[in-house]
Length: 91
Image (cartoon, rainbow, N blue to C red; front, side):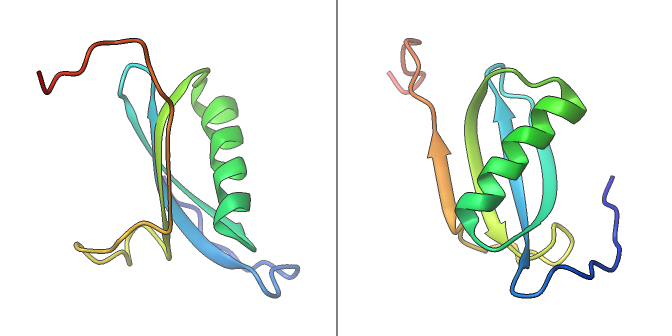
């Protein structure tokens, strides 16, 4: 679910959308308003924990703009990957 609204204190901020993958690789799509990709990362991690109960994050992709407005070939502005002790599935 995406909630749209007017934000009076959003001067200098922009919309970021992201894909947050939990440790078990469940995907959560989240939109936030932030002044930087790093700030968006922190907000997305917090929202994933509070809204969906995610306690361990494995991978995060963050893009500029909304989920609906993202181009199919858009490149992320920030990537974060948590290392694991699991063997690679690539062989």
